[in-house]
Length: 345
Ligand SMILES: C[S@@+](CC[C@H](N)C(=O)[O-])C[C@H]1O[C@@H](n2cnc3c(N)ncnc32)[C@H](O)[C@@H]1O
Image 1 (tube, rainbow, N blue to C red):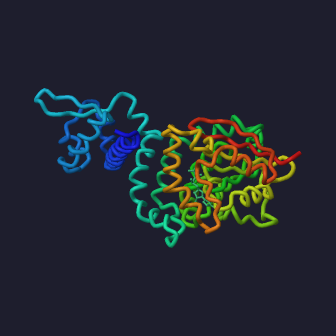
Image 2: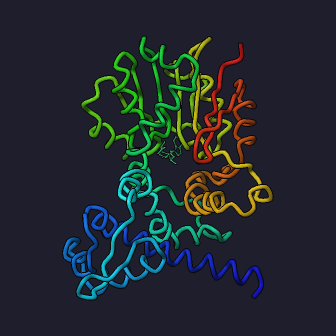
Image 3: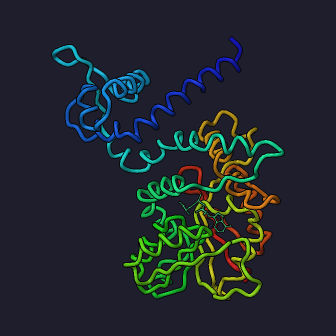
């Protein structure tokens, strides 16, 4: 068999199981198995999740065959299923929401497909489901992300303790800003979004945090003379999603309070070349997410730069340098870099 046929067959099989796995996560099969202290039959799983047994059994067969769940025989010869030790903790952290990406991509398959054609639409904006998944990931990761900023951005913790003005752009559902605002009550935080509904729901959701306010901004259209200056501007996984990242970076620079204003952002940091990343399924999956999510999101305007998540660390750092920052990038886990941008001295 040719390499192409082998790879395509293997990947299609993995994709089929991946979509089934997403379904198992969404209908609660992993949660049910994880919360049981003994193996369960398909009937018991179905009962616990208010599911139809026949559907649950077929899906469990898939998961067991793919070695995602363990399968054994009970005393009365019935098949019973369980999860390996440690799976439960992982599912409650980032893995759980990550497993739902295949079903998310399936749900936007047609609109994204339409975007490919020259006479089709240009953009599919993030749906509520996308923001929900990102928020679930953030529930597990926000404390660690906050710690990364605090540990690696020079003097940040001292400044935040003392009390400074901070804004996060593209805050999504606002969890990271909320985490930091609660940790540093002397500082004043703004969680900014371009999506009006997010600003509205964030206002209600985090109303109990006195030093956190909300604003609606298009980061690519910062006024020549910004309404307000900030001591620290930050964002996570936003720059590569913007139609005009250079204009955004220049706008952020105008917003920084002279002379010590700081901008730092986390973004995906691949090599930028499929030649170098050849064989990495991790990077390949970022290209897949780029195809379905980042490119359609960034085409808010037909002249979008549409960087995508895999433009590479050097491209992103180069844009920040072009915008007039002194840039240092620090690798952090999971193919992400922290870009620390200072005003020129
Ligand atoms: C990949 S999400 C990241 C969300 C959040 N920071 C996180 O890490 O979960 C990118 C965010 O950028 C926001 N965004 C997209 N275009 C924008 C623009 N022109 N100005 C400001 N934010 C924008 C989106 O609404 C979305 O919430």
